[in-house]
Image (spheres, rainbow, N blue to C red):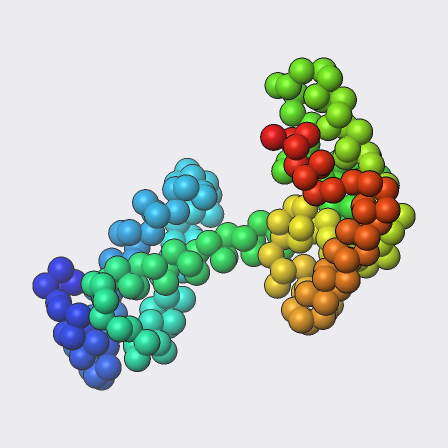
Length: 211
């Protein structure tokens, strides 16, 4: 049983072949499936149709990952705790991938001024004076981004820095390597920072309006 194995017994059983390994994998899978739902409720409701499919998918991927990384376990925690951390990381990565897989970059760069998304939307709970300031800052930042950055830089900045799309997903959609996208974003930030300085706008000015 999983509860009765020590760290060394887990490692020994998983490194062998035959019934011991099969039993260990079955027990370890049960540990993952039992623990993941609680760990994932922060990001995904258990009533979501994809919830338990995700748990099963991640459990299988976790077992493969654990088998290929047994030598990296240092014994600083319970073996099952280490495994659960791997499972949660894989699950979160998969959730982020699924969230963005059907979203095109063109959808994020719209023509209605809402490309800043929920992070920088005008807060309806604030007073009219602050709401006006927020709207003006958003319009100003949109203008600077549109005027100063290339179309490719705009897509990258809006997707990654504003909407929070994982850089791996953005790179895939833009048919670029991860390093090339990093370089594109770096250049875009420098151009935007220089333009903001020329217009007398600082990052603190922007953040202050949305505090």
